Amino acid sequence: MRRGRREPVTGTVLDAANATFVAVICFGLLTGISTQLQTVGPQAPWDVDPYDAVASFATMIVPIVAALTGVRYLRWRHEVAYPSFALVEIVRGCAVALFAVAATDTAYLVAVLRRGFPTPAPFRPELAGLLGLSVVTVALAAWRSAGAWSSQRRSRRRPDDITLSGQPDAVDDVAELLRSAPANLAPLHGLCVRAADLLVAWAGSSALSPRRHPWLFVAAVSFGAGVAAAASEFVHEGLPPSVGVGILVVALFGGIVATGGLIGYALVGRYLHLVHSPRRA
Image (cartoon, one colour):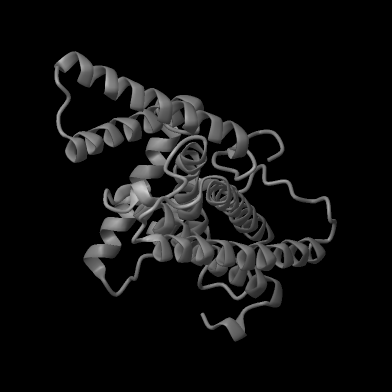
């Protein structure tokens, strides 16, 4: 739907979300290029701890939060006015993602000021440009998000009415987005609807679903991501010298990422209304 046809508060929130997505993309380019390219990484002043540790935690949080916010953004895309709870969830997602990006940018700036670029550093202009672009985009997105937060608060009948309990959670949002797949693509639409039905059924009955055991679900998914990260490390750096060392590396990666996932869920899980809760979100 075109921007001009949106209800004003909804349009303001969606503009903030668009700006946040741009900031997240720039953040991804900065961290991806400066940490994953072996010819570029050693030239980055932030390629050591504690600066790299800040980025590592942020890169675990930002993609998940941005994806969830994108799902909620797209779920109501055909509506002129989004429900008030959806606007709250979108603005909160923007705030969490931007905070993580801003923390990383700040750590990187401190690294530049304290350590400087090595000599020689052929990619110094590119790295500095990517960092500057990330700082500018996150600042603009934060400004838009602050305006969106103020607008959606004024639009509510009671400024303190931000309860999300009883509203659709992340599982519902993903399921409804799947059900809204284009109907003119019959095979795709049918597949998406079946996937949505399976997702809802699994969330309501499985012992491993996020609704029944959210902490166990987060730990399992995070540990799996850590195992995948270890496998990626083996691909880039080569196989470990022995099976024992390989198991230790996998366990270490899995444990670190699982711990980070649990910390992230403890910090923002309820705030972002990831799963149904009988108490206030």
